[in-house]
Length: 149
Image 1: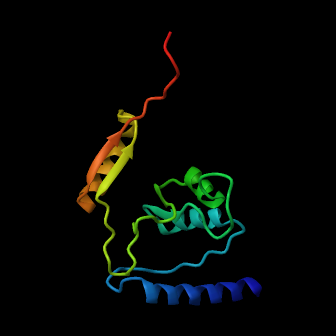
Image 2: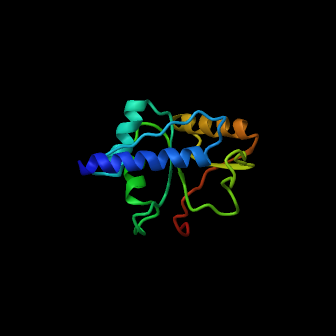
């Protein structure tokens, strides 16, 4: 009974949020999951709804985590079968403030080793760059191992 009540109120809250904040010209739906762990609920929903991409924040409302990403995000990143786009606390007005406002990504950095194993990542970066009409910069970082003898 308690879980059903929580689901019912969460569903109403999410529906209200979607109606007030999501642009009306976009296809949107809302789903309430009930799981012991949020990461399990996210991953189960991805499988059931056949999602192509997960977008989530690096820190939720569960408090500060000792690592770069929150524990839920970290688990999803490591267990997901689809790409996960993580967004840290927005800076420099990265995220649009109005529902109908377009997200602007002018410069995209793709940090990757240039080899055949990473072609899917490189193609994703190129696809995003085309979608946002951005400039894409590819970066390969070589580890500095100290002075050579």
